Amino acid sequence: MPRSPSPMAAEPTLNLEALLARAGVENSLARELARYGGLVLEANRHVNLTGAANADELAAHLLDSLTVTSYVRAPYVDLGSGAGLPGIPVALATGLRATLIDSTGKKARFLESALERLGVQGDVLGERAELLAHRPHLRECFASGTARAVGSASTVAELLLPFIAPGGVAVLQRGGLDTAERIALQDASLMLGGAVEAEIELGERRSIVLVRKERPTPARFPRRPGVPDRRPLCG
Image (cartoon, rainbow, N blue to C red; front, top):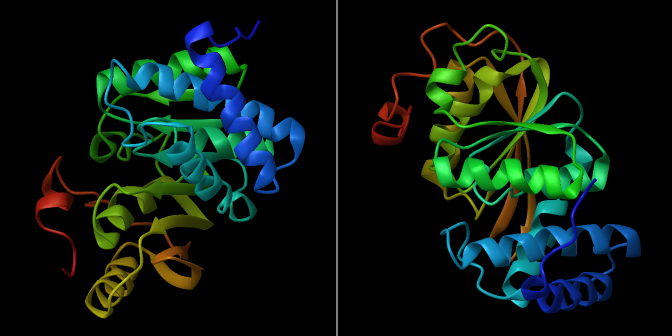
């Protein structure tokens, strides 16, 4: 049975619900997102989950998470979930079961607790993506995946595309791509079995980049833990 937020989280939860409703989010979804946001703000006092320190700041992150919902389908994976963004809002909005990946122990424990308290169907994998992506039961097993703020675009592609089945799509939330990063992502995607399909501008230097998986990723990717971040492909 999902538990209600503590009294400490009640006020930000109500504020979040009002902010989301004013932004056009349907009432029942706004309520569920606000419950989740209350958990984040409550836990953020003890664990560094997100830079959002209040309801106004977190509402922007929740709304940004909803921008990817039309591009995802089951089975679905979220890489570098952190506080659960965008994975948990996506699950709440779509009803999809979410596999959330974050190698930081405190964050993984928060994600497990949040799924339980919200009654959301999902799994939390608290290990590095570079290792998980080489496991047969996870490699190329997902129709879609998201990643938000976990490195350069080509680094994210190397970490996420090995999880995506051919025909599936990697959905990258970016703060805008300059020419050099765009070219690096295009070249890295080809090496990884994918191709950049679209770049959707959202305004305020925010964008969604869709990378379609066209063929299996070569077995050598992703490289050893830490290498994709230190030496981005085609960077």
